[in-house]
Length: 470
Image (cartoon, rainbow, N blue to C red; front, side):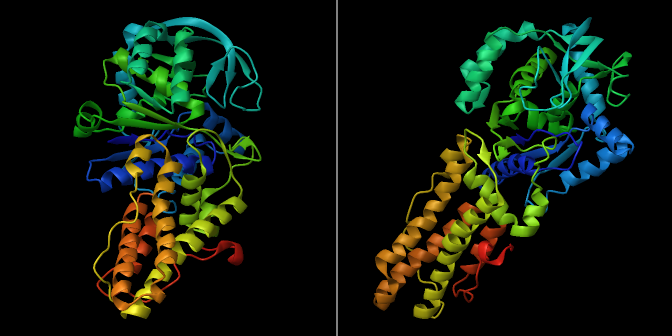
């Protein structure tokens, strides 16, 4: 499976919304690797945006300095968030990206033409709109732009795009987003501008082949990363031959990925992605988390304060498949304490303590499974909250089993059966939890490993009491 995230602009440091998508992609990648499937998990940064140029100007630093610094911050999320990506592409620094964008441009030249254009432009979205304000909530006024641009004949691909989505060959989840894309397509597609004047771009970006007065539109440039990052044999392996090519993204950029990108690929004679998985937004006090809104919760600061398990668990356990999720540190703390400290941590500690108390730490033969764990089904539906809850059913059933069997009141023979069942449940929990919380899963596995268990140790600190922890 080829799993990609969007590549964010680097006009500022990463925020918690970026972490959401990265963690979701990481769960998919780890889950499919655990099943023995080949996986490539790719992410990166979109360096060639006008937003980056304007941010550098506002800060009074060269564009390259700002881009390099902030891109490094995005790549640096790998360790703190326990990410397992295989490839990180930077569109301004990757050796093959510019050449790949130029190849796609030439391959689509039969669908390109020049004409004058006037319209309202949102720098935040990097796209034109017929009227303001920006539908995605960017507060800066739309700019009136009048210039000569290169256009792509998107209108030519209206019927084939509709058929691809309706047939399921291009799968869009959830269904509400699929219907949104179909409504957009079937209302009629206009040709789109795919270049910007080099003067307006301050000379930053990839020049249009044969026309240095223009730079390639940042989305045309950025979308190509899903192919241009695949070097040598990787292109054939992961784009041509791979049967599952899945893009993860936020709802604000679905049009680019579900309409513009497939049309580009059709025009260029390239294979198409097979899945587009869309998440909604994180909000703070009802407002979308964003750099421009000034409410960009810092994932690194949250990990430093509360630990990676607490941050990943909130993102996976609290964010619904459909609908925005409002973030507060109090909610993160409450979820971590309830589930990780009081639920998971208490269960494992309780089981290990009883094994030592009643069986001198020796693990009896494994008992039967307490519950089926339908993680595969939930992740296939791109429902991370349901998948996390499926894993959590092991914790809930094991705690119920303790109360039901009460090993402290059993005979030795009965204790061997009940505690064998509970140790098996904890070991299975470590396996099932690994894609979601790899650090916590490793601690659980270590706590119940071997024929004779190590002594009981607290797995999680209660954050509400401590005020911080990991």
